[in-house]
Image 1 (cartoon, one colour):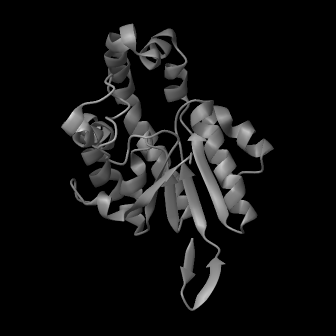
Image 2 (spheres, rainbow, N blue to C red):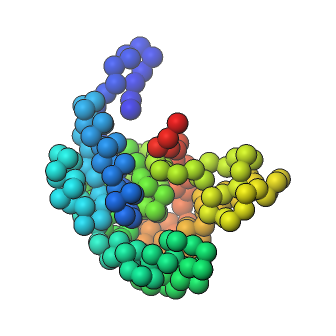
Image 3 (cartoon, rainbow, N blue to C red):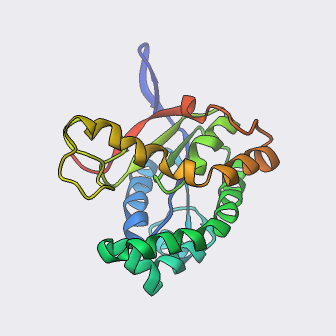
Length: 217
């Protein structure tokens, strides 16, 4: 939201929200979109195509993203990977199947951002495109996460790791959550930045990260 010391009124903004995943990854962002609309902002939500009707029922403008990612998560292999434990090997197999989908998702998110021309991009951790699109459009990007792990802390290790504590390494472990996906898809991201966004292959999207919004107290 935009305000000035000499003008405390919040000015209406165009806010793009990008999210990926299951209903648990979409419903909190629909609630956020409704709250932002109630405050006079113009909002557009980009999410899996399977939730288009859900967004419409809540009066949220929606841009469908390819539904293959959600379909993969709903497969037996995807459910095993999400469950963890014995599903660790399934997780690596799932990653191999997801890699070809990444470019399609990135291009769909690009289409949404270019068409909507937001003042700010709010994105789920699974939306890797968010900070890069903010760099393209020259606007802030805000990470909105339904779970902890994206702000380094010494109080506990990254929830992605199966440890209650790593002692002095707790803070460092959070870099896995913050940078892990960017490293896994580095080649795809570099090619997309150059061919679709017209940006250098290794820019500074982090400069556009304006903070993190967590969905809990």
